[in-house]
Length: 79
Image 1: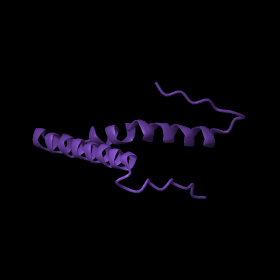
Image 2: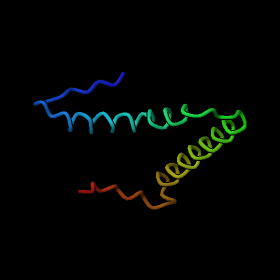
Image 3: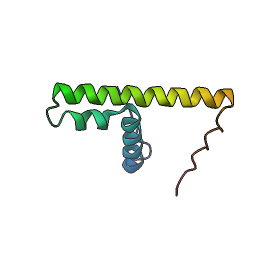
Image 4: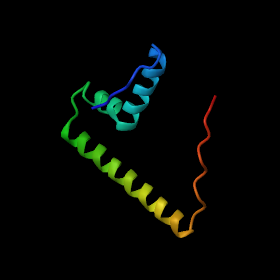
């Protein structure tokens, strides 16, 4: 369960933190998926695509650790 504390009546900051946590957990993607019916064939295709994406990410990280690929650039905060 997600829990956010509002400090100094700053609701905007608390809302921003809530959205960030929900994005990280995949709640928005899950809600969007439940809006419309998903055919079983579409569900299988989506799950297969997600598995391929995870496998590629894992392989990329493994190759970076072994030094076969350059390390990923750290993301900088936009302001």
